[in-house]
Length: 331
Ligand SMILES: [Mg+2]
Image 1 (spheres, helix red, strand yellow):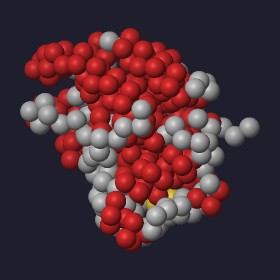
Image 2 (tube, rainbow, N blue to C red):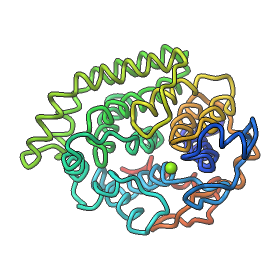
Image 3 (tube, rainbow, N blue to C red):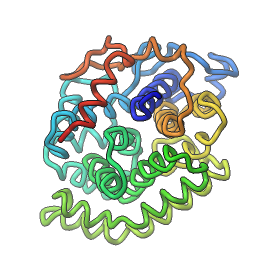
Image 4 (cartoon, protein in one colour):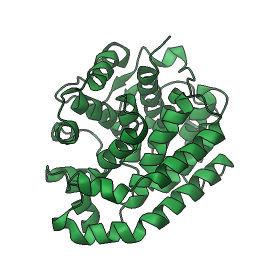
């Protein structure tokens, strides 16, 4: 019986690497260059990723796992994300860079405040499957999902989207039908006092009072927006594959209920825009469902960056097992 956490990590990385070639392209340009189907890694990444290389999404997922594997919880995850950034990756999201600059747990909150409380990109959602892969379950999973997201993305829409996603992965793994799993995950999101969790973790605090008040004012509406977008996704609706967290979540939910791994991932890749991130989130969902990654996509799979704890030329199939095992044995 294959390890579901390891399979999910391979699945999200393979999906991210497939989407790397089509990121920022239009569906028309993608069809003109690659044709109507997209079943293997291709050149053409705007960031220079080679075919088969995972982008920042899967790199930061692995960095998070490396952080857990070193013990020390949230501080250790933050240090691991900073080590990834300091090694100069080809692609880093704007809010992620600003958030990790300070090296303090409230860096994400401060970056959100600097954006005028506007930034709500998908940079937290894209890497949060790491928390489920690390073996957290239930209420602890929901709390960990909120805090690890807020290290870079503290808007309540970002935090709620992540809490939904990790609960969804847990429910999908428990083999609930897709729609039931989504509704169960929405109940987990609604039941979490995310503001209290961020306060207890030292992410929100006295020095970030305005952020705290803004979070409190907007959290109820944020949950309602996530609920509406998840339900739209369940009906197959895709507003856009933009980098806005709610667009990414809706698109991923719309794609990831299909019958096979490729039927889930391929539409995300062919639609372009932030296709690697949408595909990565779809890959996490498909992996948790137990859908098998096509065998030809596994041997060439690598990550497109070297940083302390990871080398760019390492095959994921060889090195992921130890990363997952160390994260799971964190205590
Ligand atoms: Mg990316």
